[in-house]
Image (cartoon, rainbow, N blue to C red; front, side, top):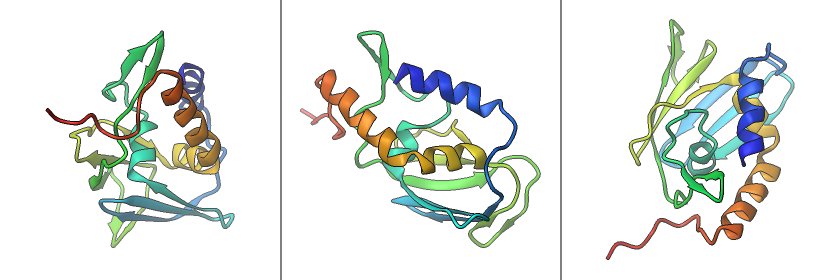
Length: 147
């Protein structure tokens, strides 16, 4: 997980390598669907977007030196908003990025179109690695039970 976060930090500051975004569809509370000019379409769940939030303050628990977000299986997306001076038309955002607001009150992650393309195109590997990390530390995707 730590290696992935370092790679993402490098990736975010790299020039654009992704195709042009052609559609961004927010489907609260469950998912976001993005489509790119090369025909790639990615439907990403709220949980996936939340655990791979590019924000530094993502309510991360440090376990054995690894930073792990857990218990977010049922997190929802409350809204999304364009960041900067970008136009919004229906469910399509034009510009370079958006901020997603989650129902666990996380709201500082700004998702660039390049970042969404990167995590979308690597979704299955990223999710598999995430589940392995949780299992390794005895954590769960499910939220802790309230007493």
